[in-house]
Structure formats: C-alpha cells, structure tokens
Length: 284
Image 1: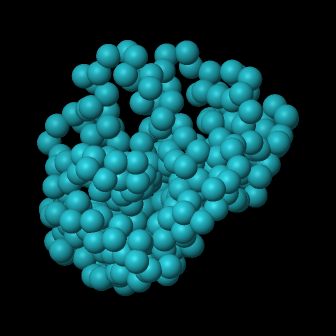
Image 2 (image 1 turned 60 degrees about the horizontal axis):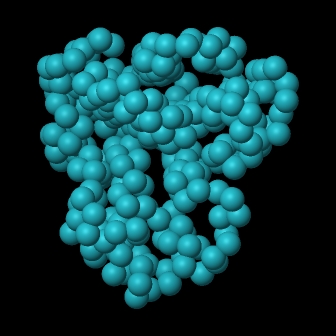
C-alpha cells in the first residue's frame, strides 16, 4: 500500500526479469534455493538482510534439528548451510553472548535459555517458542512491509490454531504463538469471533473458510488470502525490494503446492497441521 515504507533501492532490471506468477502455476519458476542464489547478490546489504529474514523460517527448523542430532540432514531451503551451523554451534558452546553476522539475535537467546533454564518452556514446545521469538524479531523490522507481513501471518496462523483447538477441544494457551495483543486475547477468549474481529480485519473470512471440510481446498483458500494480501500491499511498489520479497513468498506457496500434489492423504494431513502452527513459515 502507498503508506508502507519502501526500500531506497530500485531494482528495475531484477524485477523486470522475474517471470510472472499465477496462483495455479505448477512449473516455470525457480526453486526457493535457486531463487535465493539468483537474487541475493543483486540486493543492497540492507535489503539482503530482509530476504535473509524470510529464509530464516527454514533456519529455525534446521536449528532445532541440529540440537537433537548434530549429524542430521538439513533442509536446504535455509539460508545457513551445514558449515555455518558447525561454526555457530561451536560459538554457542564457547561464548555466553556470541556475536556473528550470520547469527540472528533470537537464536542466541533461545540457545541460552534451553541450556540454563530446564523448565523455561513451561508447557510450550520448542518449535512454538522459537517461532514466537522469530515473529517478535521480524515484526520489529524497520521495513514496514516485512513487519506487517509477519504480523498478518502471525494473526492468521494463531486464529486458525484457535479455531482448530476449539473444534477439537484442545487447550489453546500453549499453542498460540507470540506476544501480541491478538495472541493474548486468543489464548483465553470464548467469544464466537474469538474476541479479535475488531483487531484483525480478516477474522470473519478466516472463520468461514476454516469450515471447509476439504483440507486441501481450505489450504488453497488460505494461500489465496495471503496471495491477495501480497497483491494489495505491493500495488504501489513497482521495482522495490518489497516487490521482490512478495515474489519469493509467492514462489514458496507455489513450491509447497507442487510438493503437496504428489503426497498421500495422510502425509498431506500432517503437513497441514504443521503449517497451522509454524509460521515463515514463509508460508508453510
């Protein structure tokens, strides 16, 4: 939208060279890994950090995986590679307050807590707690498109989680991620609209689409909502980094659907439940 802060850089040739994307595309676009390799070197240092923040969703997964098994195979969609993680994990062990340009601040905070406070989770899963730190950090971005995108996703995913918990009579207090006002309300509200209709403009739409009993169709509607949000919030961003970031987010959605299209029903169901709790998830 026009009021959103824009990057100072103009990426006319980069944006012009990106293939058009449609919601139902299944081919003709680069993978997330190849897209990062292609785009990252062409961005300013400041804008490259914004792109890196999107890919941090996969770094989160890899971080948790490595804490359980240092020899585990990593998701190659992450920004940090095996050699990076080897260095950083060593740094965690050697320093209380490690400093490294590859290291996003919340990683060190998380690591310090799990090593010094055995009961700090108090019922949270490590995945959800790390996701909360990730969202809190991303929403502090000086780029308003980025901070608003993460806030939108956090609210959307939390509302879907609250709906899921109510439907299946599960306690939602420890499944709602983040520390925003909406997150706090969703943890305890029993109202039909979960008490957030006046704070999250998509509340009624999300409640309605969540009633679809076809899991795949429901997920497509959720992604369509995100796609439309990206269209609206980059309408006046013609050749800026915001346009590029939105493109990467759309590719992530398309790649996810391409992967889901070849999976069995039970695998799809597990992926959908996981996607409701992760955020960066770029979507996913």
